[in-house]
Image 1 (cartoon, rainbow, N blue to C red):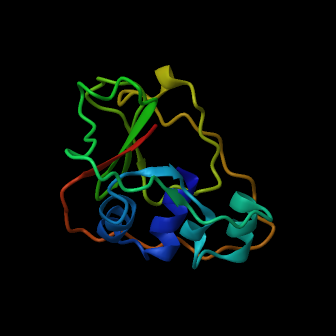
Image 2 (cartoon, rainbow, N blue to C red; image 1 turned 90 degrees about the horizontal axis):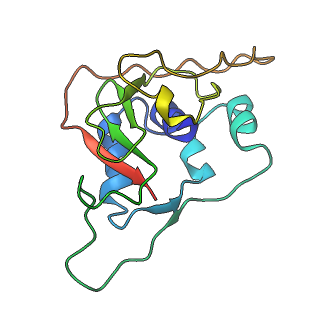
Length: 159
């Protein structure tokens, strides 16, 4: 999620729809992993904090020639550990298959925050399970603001 937050704030200049198009429309088969290419445009200090010396572009799953394409639904998502729904206000984190809602991490959240991966903590009635980001030694550029328009939420999933 830190890569998605940083990408929204820097590479896509606060445009959630452009981020969704990149993550979903341009990779309909999904991603085996997201890469440091999402940090393009981020300040060097933030890039160093999130990626260190690693510089690996994301890896998309290969296109399947068989039809119909794999579509994740509540009935077919049992193998997924986490789901992310991209909203105009942030990323909704759904921590278990079949859950109707999850916590929303707003787009202006500092990407350096450490998120807890305990699924039971990610509920809409609880605060986001995260720690305070470390104090920066170098000032980073402030995140871009989000647009007030409300595009349709987009859902991504991690296998």
